[in-house]
Length: 208
Length: 76
Image 1 (cartoon, rainbow over the protein chains, first blue to last red):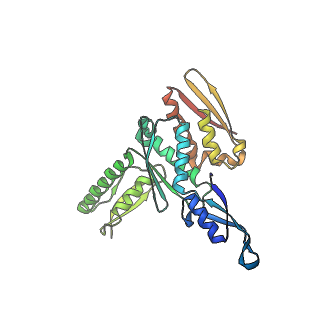
Image 2: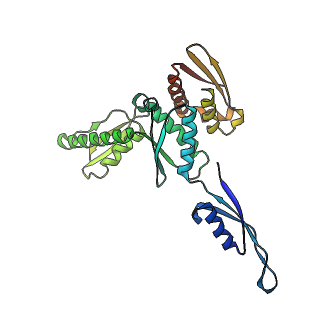
Image 3: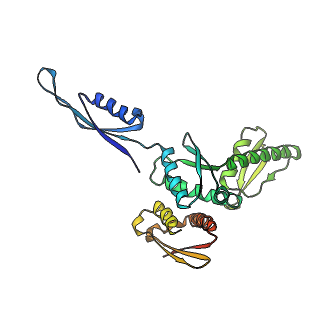
């Protein structure tokens, strides 16, 4: 992991920290501080020896994920551009555009899912707090999510009308999560999953 | 192609120095033989071969750009 570290001196530890933060242009929460030497005062309150500290900038998770994604996509020799990187409570969402996006998505999003899965593994390998990585290409995933939400709502209406369970087609855990989440707020409906991967299906049913 | 598999494998295992990829290139297909430390086998195969499958999917997409077929074999 690339970490930026600088050494700073100052009349006091506080002063050295302030100078280091100015130089790194970051907040105190973004850095790890190590005091190497406390200042010592000589006669008449003059500083004899300055404080010496070492300040390292902690890499933000989203920067880390971005760098690893770039490494991976470069090795895949794709032409791409990273549009935006969003960080939201343990989740990194990255949107990519470019010429080779058909290739990156693959059949039914197969390649995109594989890249996302591998990236998630690499990113979380040495991380204590796990990060969820979501890759999107030209809002492909967002659009799919929206159409899946619409489908889930339609099916839940059907369940209410017919009073019979509906079993959806086998879906990935991500897709199942979308269905569970959108129907969570419906007081008449409950959802659960049945079967084993990769044939696990969501069942939409009436709450008893 | 070799670079790609090597990069992914090295990023996943505990012993990156033991990762070795041999590329055998034919006219229309490429065979990549991946070897890792015995303790790291699970790290490149995964539950029900999930990781191995993802590695194969990614290499296939990359090879498709060059109009080639690619086979990734994980060897003991």
